[in-house]
Image 1 (tube, one colour):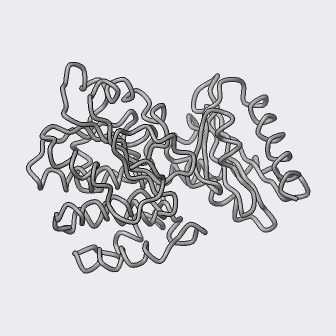
Image 2: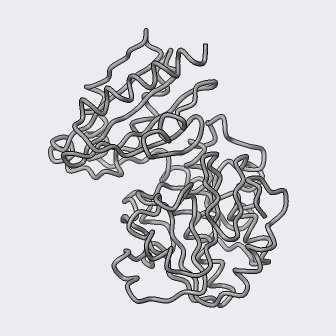
Length: 330
């Protein structure tokens, strides 16, 4: 199977998972709700099949997702030294480098498997399910679990709901599909506590995150006549609020929803010399192209990258790239 879009489960992927007894599962570095939720659900399903599964993440599970069932099993890359696996599965990663510190351990496994939905995917797996029309990696994992004939329990339903609802911005993004709604309806039938999950994932914010968001909004900077907007966070902002890097992720959704905004970015520098960008856009503008040129990737309307350099210089590069994208899309 070499195409990016599959209407049925790729047989090679199913066959590899059924044959493997020891499996490494890796979400992308700095895992978001889709990456960690999908990886947790997949891990639970494989364990139900009697597989010995290690779920390893290059970065810790973000605090807002620690309530999900199974997060206590997530280990860091340092625990993988000397471990052997029959197969390794990457989840929600468009390229091998997105696995961060887990990449070298993933590469050491003979069979590489891949589940993803990013248009910038490099198709690196020996067997894969890459569907750019899927609303979230969680949608593909749900299909995969069903294809493996594993019953979805309430814990798996919670993880899959986290994956799908967070990657669709609570079903508000233009990538939301009818399939996403149908899957959630089936998850409710499997025991998903929809009200409690929706409130925890989309409404409740820790104090540190609210204080960090307030500091980011103080740097709000519209440009290009208000069609673009940016905000920045510095190491001092994290220190002053007690916030974590993961608390930054909600800020970008505020920026792209500013009236008149067509593209937005949040530049956050948790430590000097490195700047991470979260980028968003509205059609027809493509921020994945901007991110890819800077070593990142993602979707047309939601992407990210990490750039080495000082904050002001890195922001100037992204400013220029967004202005070029505005001009090219005219």
